[in-house]
Image (cartoon, rainbow, N blue to C red):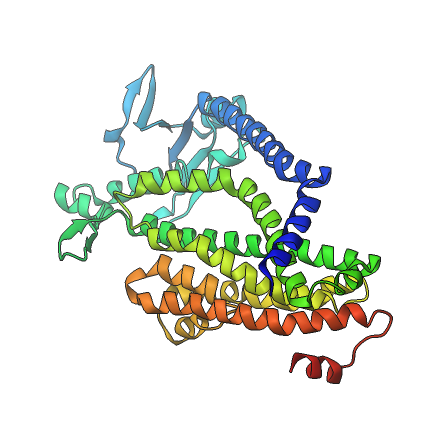
Length: 422
């Protein structure tokens, strides 16, 4: 291939796309539009939650089983009130008086400990039409009431220290062994698991979005060129390998520029959050650092296949259908995400590392979940495999690309495609 011809084709394809008003509006206008929408929605939700927080956080309680420890309640203007953080629980002696306050909106909900509570454990929750949907359930008062009932059942039966351990049986302090052998305190397992699974999932979706958005331009331009028959003229002075390579680099640059603009805000927020958590959780910096290289290599491989396949379609719709299979192969690691997260260095993870269709996303997942379990030569080897596969795909794809354009009006047979590929 002649570099000057490849560069000329790439420059033409890049400028023809980035000069379109539709491209500029979509690239720069869409992030602004989404930011405005997101800001408006977030502001409205914040305003709503602020108003809701300013409302009363009082709940009513009636003890018909005589099991509640009333010593935690304090007298407050003729009422018996127990305050826990921002929640107030008022102990009522009369069901009728409690219902009046509930209907008037003085309390958000009423809880009644049934007479047969010791046998059934039943506590009836009564709400009115004015009770907000999010004011009850397990995220607000009900965990507080469960703690109160547990404590009440243990009064005069267990020592204070034993009561505290029954209410909170274990306070797990997790540590992590560093590569240097030091035992350092880690954060809660839930947060650690959330970070270590969210980041690889985010990187995986980011990779697939980059591949599919950039490859979409390839399919679109191939369909347009085939209808205008411009490539048939170019083939007189430029080889099919040079055309496919030029389109691959030029349109890929346009797609990656657009994707970079779209993802810049998200990446900035993600990296800022990662930097803030770096002192308490294990941030997979190796995966974040390798991801851009795998983005480019994965796009070049998938893009070369999509270019060759799209040229075989009779129109744009058929070209899109022919390229769906390549996109499905790239999504395979997400389909087995549970296995890769549980055993990132198992047989499946190691196998998919060396398959060019799945290696970009698989390597990112393995580095994010357990960077110590994947050797450096596996990362380098997967990249070299992608480079080799891209070279083969361009060589074979260029022949299919030529056949697809020159045989316009007649569909090439499988035997013809196989002969050209050989």
